[in-house]
Amino acid sequence: MSKDRRIPPSFEVELEKKSISYCKACGHPLPTDAASCQNCGTITLAEERRILLEKKQLLLEKKRLLELQENLPECRDCKNAIQPASKTCTMCGARYPTLSKKRYLRFEILKSVSIVLMALMLFAAAALVKELI
Ligand SMILES: [Zn+2]
Ligand SMILES: [Zn+2]
Image (cartoon, rainbow, N blue to C red; front, top):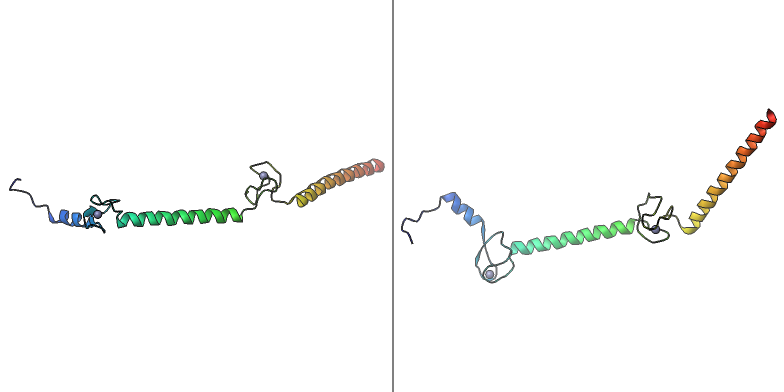
């Protein structure tokens, strides 16, 4: 050991104090960013807190996802959760997947009936125009 061992400047001592914590199990000094005690292997308080926080965030995220899925309507055919406004199911390609089978059929029938009616009206209008001329 050399005799002229330099004394660290005071701010360095302060820094050292701040960056050191002690193992809650054996009292071994540890850097604050250590995950576990180098002496006995016990997880540090900071690490424990970090793990707890991570678990909490994971749970929150899970809950959020579940809520999101519960709020989403499901596809008539494949029961896959879909966006409320989507007109086609991204999974099976069903059209208007939020409508029930009955309502979807009624919708399709109404659509075809209205097309037929429209054609008839056009036909009638054409006939009328022909007669007038
Ligand atoms: Zn320890
Ligand atoms: Zn589908």
